Length: 237
Image (tube, rainbow, N blue to C red; front, side):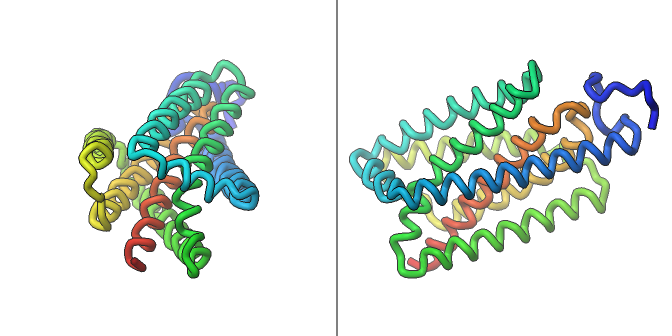
């Protein structure tokens, strides 16, 4: 390894020595796994504390409740990303990842709570978890084995996310339901996002930004899991 190489220097990981690239990928996916573990633990503790049913009841008080939750989540996400990407200190970066992970667990509470109200709710969650895991593994394998730069998808993914957000807000105000086809479209969009983020790990991030890279990838995986679970729940209605 080149002893003069600075892992926090500006420049993509793709231009770094092989040992640095390998270490960056290992750290990124270790942090993704840690975020998933923390998400599962926080979700389990909140469900055990009875907060799942409380979240469902709270959102049922007004059709605008979910809009307020979304607004709060977007604010927290902005702050978490600022901390993780700012790079002021390692502690701040980890705080950003932890904050985002806990926020994801909170916003998942109503969906998990509704799923667990069904007799086969735990099975549905398990099936959605397995399907999401296989999708992530397959997409990751495609990104790494083909060695294709999928960051060209970034613009399309941003447009797709803005359209999806618009449809969600419109559904809240106008009272129509976004069915299984919307969930399917979001699964495809998040699949593209995972391909994009996997490529970005090598092409857009500097070697010292593994925490920020993990946050971005975890966000796509969590959203993918949300819509896979919604598809399973819709299919059992």
